[in-house]
Image (tube, rainbow, N blue to C red):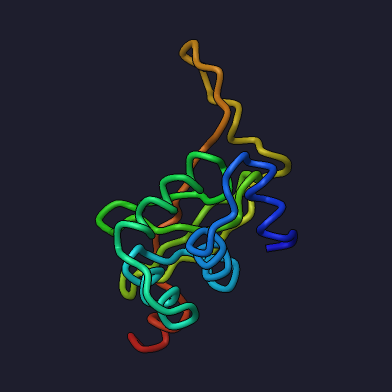
Length: 140
């Protein structure tokens, strides 16, 4: 995270609370975490926090645009603090690892949908599926 999470929360008209700061810190350290992992990391760093509190924080942060929720087919929802750009994801079919992938061609080309179908597109979600290098090395 490049800016102060307290300021980000205030600019999003959200109260600055310990659980919100803790979740933003965890997601700033490591992206693409599922809810259970976020809960565990928050508890490791900051002590007791309820499952419901983390779910509520994730919902509020996602609604405010401070956190992005992704859910590749067949997996649990994951969260990341990288928002506001048009990056995509690559998912390993073997281990489930997820990595960020920059937009494939130039500046947000996938926001121009062929044919359009009357939509005003404001976001595109692309998921590349394959095998990560670690899993590929194990297979040889």
